[in-house]
Image (spheres, rainbow, N blue to C red):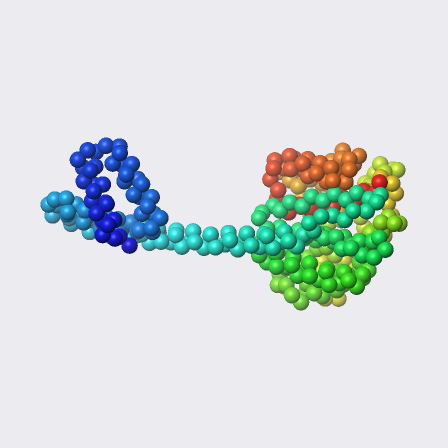
Length: 333
């Protein structure tokens, strides 16, 4: 709203400019314009303000006075757009605040550190393509030197993905106390997800239990991107086997348990499809090409290997992540 003191200030600026027509007066008008924007003064109000200021400075010809009626009508449309933009800006700021809260909540769901075991290195890289990630991973401490490893990809992004992630985290924490087998874990999680998320959503996941004494990994997959096993003695990478429906698709899904044991310098790589869906120019990277890049990093420690591959793929994709990227590297030493 235009106040009396503001009207007086505007008249002063106009009078000074008409007298001197210098840069100082124009600068004062610019600063006044910024203040008007901050006060949400509409274009049609500014038009009326200018007309009133002219009346105070002297006699205004009738045709000039009449012309302001046309100008006011024109400015009304600008004013409507001005208010629309302000409304959109306010909604955008509110959305940004909600996203910041969701991002902070999501970060709190991820492990703050990786477990430490003798004769085993663990490396992790998890990068969101946007502000909120649809990828999830976790480590669950179990008895007798064993720990659970979960890696998942939730369909969609934004708030729905963050809320679904919290539900998966809650389910894992609750079921983790029961020390279920990988197939049983996925079976129970499938029921939880199916009952609590929108039918259009689903979750792919790999869940496994690593025995740090025997260095054996028992796992099951729910529609998830297969990882890799590197056999140091052979110098070869193998795809991890396993199949099963994604969580939330079918209430009666069954899951197969696979088991692999690591020898010294063997490497187990778990990942989401953001790793395999790296785009090089116009085509997506094939798994054989990904293995080629993995081969160049396999002599490094687990964390350096994870970091090295991420940097390679980031450069290959010209720093354009198309999807959330998560990789967990387990290396027996």
